[in-house]
Length: 405
Image 1: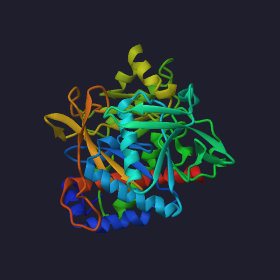
Image 2 (image 1 turned 45 degrees about the vertical axis):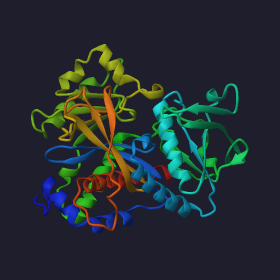
Image 3 (image 1 turned 90 degrees about the horizontal axis):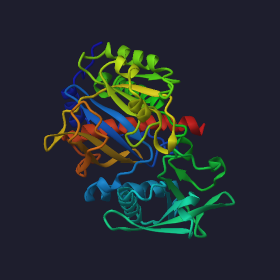
Image 4 (image 1 turned 60 degrees about the vertical axis):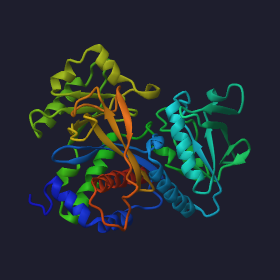
């Protein structure tokens, strides 16, 4: 099939020449009710495509954004929260329970700063009673020596409180790979992103299915070859790595996908509910899956908070051409209300261009995109990453619509 835009270079040129038109397209597609208040998208760029390889609905990592980008995030938070309700004064942030991760505490500190600078009182809170064995508050110091306090949360008459203070609005920063035991549908306090789509329910398989449909609509609108914006994939269900059940089916899916790709292309086998880079194997053939040793199978079997991985995403490996100090790199773009506000580069000296960079050895480098704004003309590569990130987050709104209906 012939398209007006067939190559990555043609797409980059198109983005630079139609920047405002593209952003008008996205702004018209995002709906207030289903847009996550924030998200992050991992993007890989090869010699012939730029594609998202993961989407996070409850991102950590705001500490990796540069100062100017964090300032823009504040602007968008202010607009977004005000649009929800102009009377909102207090914003609660439900945190993860791994409070010993000092870099995660840095993230909370920077996320809190962005929201406070938007004019709101910010409280970090948790429903995890194990964190409050001795008191109803937890006082912590982050890696960068920020003081942080997490308060014990409770529900009164369907509303969320912390230290007897009602929260007007709540931002969920807990991916619920270990579900919080609350009947969320009975809660009156507005919460975003919806707690109904944590990793106890969400599937990467479904996200990328929605992404493909989103890209197809986008590509039809602008006459673009969709292959330059997506990684091919297969989905496999009912796999048990401990008993080896389903491994042959999984291996067959790997080999089937490889028939559509160059011979030397790697395949990423990912747990559909995986997070934090867990539950990922990079293979060259289905036989590598079938003949996995026990150690490798154990790594693929259980993830964060003891989630057992049974649904798998078999995804085309996108060999990164990006480098930082001669190390392979990939880009993570952060969004607030569907607008790109910043990002960073994930770099890993222990991996090659076709490897999983979100693993041991990774470090983060600032990747400021503060000059990339709507209603301007842009020729920078960051604008292309912004388009891909907005596409991925637009796809996530379809996931949200599904659980809200």
